[in-house]
Image 1 (tube, rainbow, N blue to C red):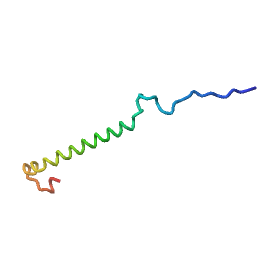
Image 2: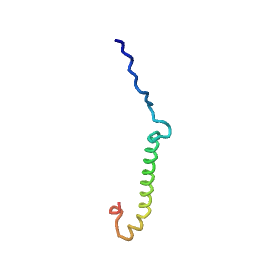
Image 3: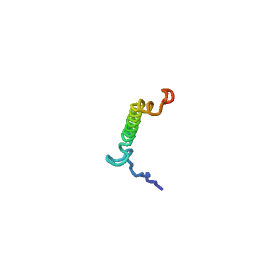
Length: 65
């Protein structure tokens, strides 16, 4: 009895170009960059309002921090 070699369907290691997931790392980096930029912008906006908040609420610098 002679056995024929088993054939396995060929699979691509990487998905075809243009399918979802091909640029997964780029999307993650872009998302993290956007979140980081928003966080820095928010901190700057709050910091610029510190003098007004300090004056209106009568806070010391330690309380404001």
